[in-house]
Image 1: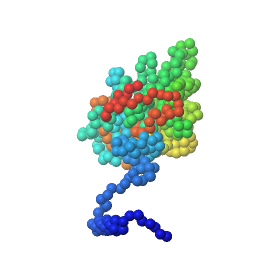
Image 2: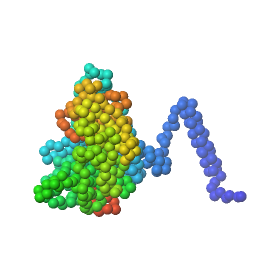
Image 3: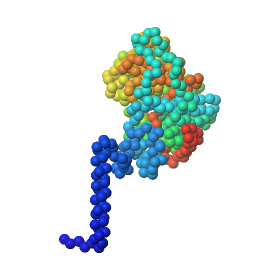
Image 4: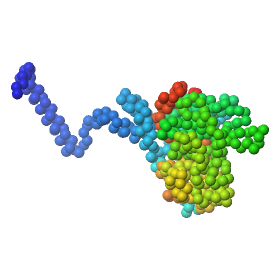
Length: 450
């Protein structure tokens, strides 16, 4: 085959020589790097990778670093803002860190402060069952959680934190005659006000209990609140409980009759698409209540087999959490033993197993009240709680030791576990009733402007 070239032969030769010179120079450079055992000086072209691999790499970074990556280039910004990336980051979950929210209320004003903890941080002080003469909790030299060292915070009116789910917070604003709920993502600075709850007759009163969760099958977030009937005309119904349910993206609340009465808010209530509470019922079979967010029905979860009426009368305190993906109940028996039981197979009574116990007489200065404020079972199985001396404490069931992590200082806030995420409220409300999502971020502190 003949190929006609329309450029000068000398020019072609010059180009060939130049290419050969560059090739030999490049080869010599590679040989020198191999001999000196050094890495190539040119950076790896990250953006040459397929975009799904770039998303996978970015999703493994800490969330604060991911936020910084949005300022690197438009491609990173587009990837990180995509709803797929938010789901990818949320699915990985924090394996080595956990986030806490400290809620402070002063008069009509309130604030939420956010802190991130490394689960591998060194032990500051500890006490094992063999340390009989050592105080369990010592605040000497202990770092203090305060407003200044919070990673970020936001201020608002007097508010109650209802719950946290997939990085979203549900808040209740008790503003006199017109109380309302709000949803926000603090890391994105997004917030919105939900429609007013169902107008109740004067005989219905808010029972101070609410829940917030996510139905993965329907891809819907839902808020449930409890009300009790205080009827003067019919005293027999004075303890009757009803519930109102709201689905984010809708414009109304729905009434659910004959709801069980929660005894207290659970410290980690959401599991398997359902919310869980301890009820005030004296019947063992009705001790643990659940609300299925898909079926929108209340049900009861069977307690451990040894929970009969006589045993329950010796339980002075009980609460519900989640330990390694299993439903867990924590309780104090005869004011002397703290026990944690997990349900290995959800809904099956025979699969309850004792995870660990804490015999209080073996731990110096450990009081019953120390274990009344659990926060969360972290990913390594440790139980975090706020002690009666207002310190953040971790108990390791494996090592049988306590370690004091932080002091709460002079303030006594409510502490809640929270997972930060990039889930946007605009994506949550997409396809539903159009809701106004406000964004009011100002550095490390922003005002919740509902």
